[in-house]
Each structure stands twice: as structure tokens, then as C-alpha cells.
Figure 1 (cartoon, rainbow, N blue to C red):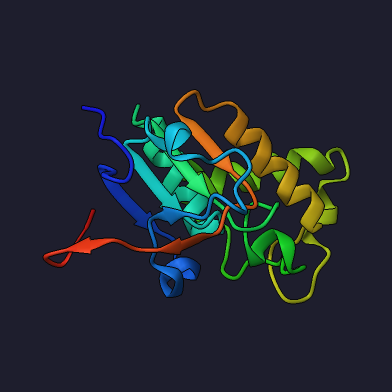
Figure 2 (figure 1 turned 90 degrees about the horizontal axis):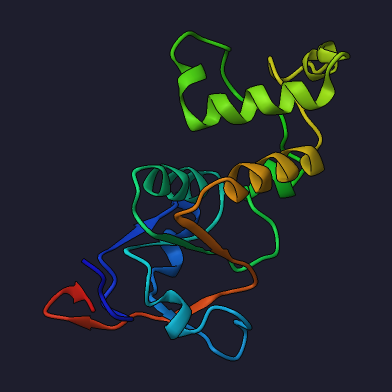
Length: 166
């Protein structure tokens, strides 16, 4: 069932976007994200950071028409834009089937055959250049028929009625 803007079926927020809980797109700053373009979205993700990207990808892969609104021109948040390309944690079983695992595997392939380059950091088991991470996320998103990303699209206001976002 398609809902008209701004009655979006769901709003998924990345952790980084929690402080800007909004569902109204600023037309002045959004060149392509008009209410008409967003009308077909069943799921609206505010923020294209690592969490928002993963939520948008999973939603799209489940066949739901999904839009990600990202206020910058760069996907991945701090993971790809702030030079924090060192992943905390360890390479463990089960992660390879996740969106994160897919991203990690694609980044490793970008560096092949010099795969050891991703292991040459002292703070993590896995490191990469921000531009490589950004490219991988863009390539992953481009393959999804049910995903549309609107860059440079800050949201400015939330409309609520009876404690519900409308």
C-alpha cells in the first residue's frame, strides 16, 4: 500500500539522526527530494550514516520502496567521511552474511591482490580509506531497485498529531 507524503509507512532513524527527528523535507535545500518524488516511499530513512544506510538497504532488499534522506553528499557517516575507516571488533563468523559483512568483503576486494593492506593498522583488525568505503556503499546502493538516496537533503520539521508522526 502506497501512502502519500508526508504519511510515510515508516520512519527509520539511524543513531546519528536521532537528534534531528524530522519528516518534512526542506524544499529550499533539496533539489531532487520533492514531496512528489518521496510520495512513492513506503519507508523513509533519515540519515545515511552507517546505521541508516544498513536500515535502508535491508528495507529495500525486502522489496519495500525505500528512500534515504542524507543531509550531506556522502554515505556512511563517520565510517566513511571522518577518516574513521578502522572497524572496532574482530572478524567473526556470522558477520559475513550481514550488510556490514558484505561491505567489508567488497572493500577487501577493492584492495586485492594487496589484501594485507586492510590489515595494516594498529587500532583494528580492518582498515580502509574513506573514499574506498564511500565508493563501495554507493555501488551497493546502486544495485537496489527499491532504494533511492537523496543527498544534500536536510529535514527541517516534524508534524505530529496525537503523538504520531503524520
